[in-house]
Image 1 (cartoon, rainbow, N blue to C red):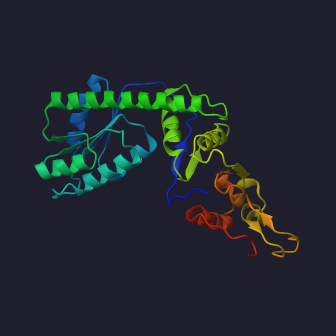
Image 2 (cartoon, rainbow, N blue to C red):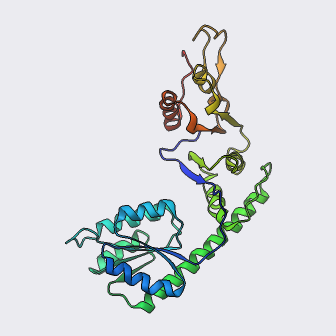
Image 3 (tube, helix red, strand yellow):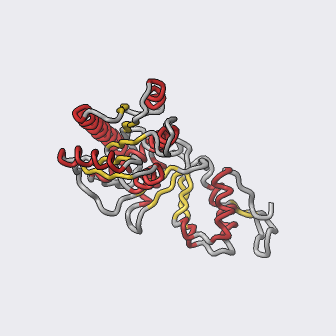
Length: 295
């Protein structure tokens, strides 16, 4: 049973979109700066979303896909440390290391620029900027990101094609590229994975593909419809029980987690698990340890 405090997430899109104009997220606390960015980029064919705080930037990044991000380093009045922007930068890089981030500040200095680059920024611009330089940086970073995405997509497709025993996985749309990239990146790890998507989008196919590409592929994949387990048998089915644990426990029984030991367990419809059982399930997922009922 692979464990991780925070699971990787794979979201299967329901509407597949074709490649479009580059989309940029700009974060700055000054409205005139955001307006200047829009006036510069929109005539050049960019789609621009603007926000005025790190919190709003986080919300935008959680719901939309961007080709590049422009962020200010200072948001609170009378601050010059750049701490808010540097923390936001670190979070963005942690979530998507290929997403280019260009940092901006009116209080630029060598130390702050070095720290921003050390944390993963692709470039550093001091306000007021030179329009041509900003356009050049964005154009280069967007093209590089798309080239890397295409490379990752081809590598993912090759791994999927070369793997044995995989379910049929058809993903020709560019909107599926992040799914393919995530599958091939996390499958060799021991991380927990959360697969989300509407009914019928192929969550089980993704789960079986992750298992087939993993180092555990020669071990069992145990699928459990956790939402369909009655509350009275939930613990016994998942964790097993020992003889005499309850009235009908005439023999020891191995649970699904033990059956999946060394392999992968797929907990389908986990969102439908009753609240009382969620705490018990969470403990096992976090610790990787189980106890049979009555042991």
